Amino acid sequence: MATLSIVIYPAKILRQEAVEVSPITSEIKRLIPQMIETMYGSQGIGLAAPQVGISKKLIIVETSDDPRATVRETTRHIRGKPALPNRGRPLAFLNPVIVKKSKETAIDEEGCLSLPGIFVPVKRAESIEILCQTADGSKVRVEAGGLTARIFQHEIDHLNGKLIINHLDPLKKLKVRRQLKELVHKTR
Image (cartoon, rainbow, N blue to C red; front, side):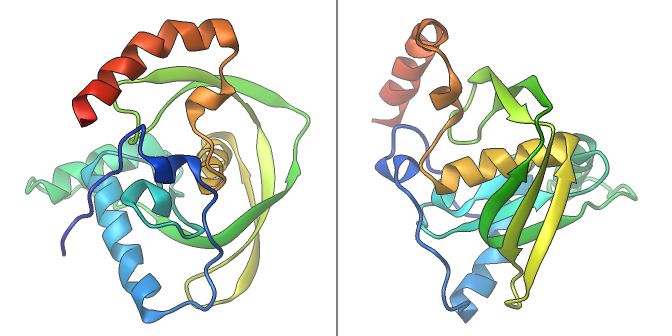
């Protein structure tokens, strides 16, 4: 299966609100495993359709107990090295909407496949509740906490045209401006 290309900042699609997935076509169902392979191949723990150039409300989230370790193991397997027992639990979520956020928040450093080399502190809710659809069209309510909640929030931000740099205050944004200019220069 072919992996997809990751769209890099400042691509316009990263700043646009994605369109709802309706109906769930065979094209969308074929896209899901490609996005999963692309996410693992890029050592990501989540991926949104706009990051592969598709303006649809579709995200992939690694839902294992330790997403970062799982992705490292799975990436080694994809690159031809022996598979480790923990193969991961990537799930696809369509049209996700956060309906509830905890008052408790945490600040943690986040990176983004579309902003390679840039890591910034982002304040997120510790736990959330999401309404969404699965690939078979079932409507589900998902509760997530910790790192999984952070992944959901990050990927849903992508669907709304928001990047991790949008969470920075103006002073911190100035500090990463040089990195962003270098990134823009590389993409041209």
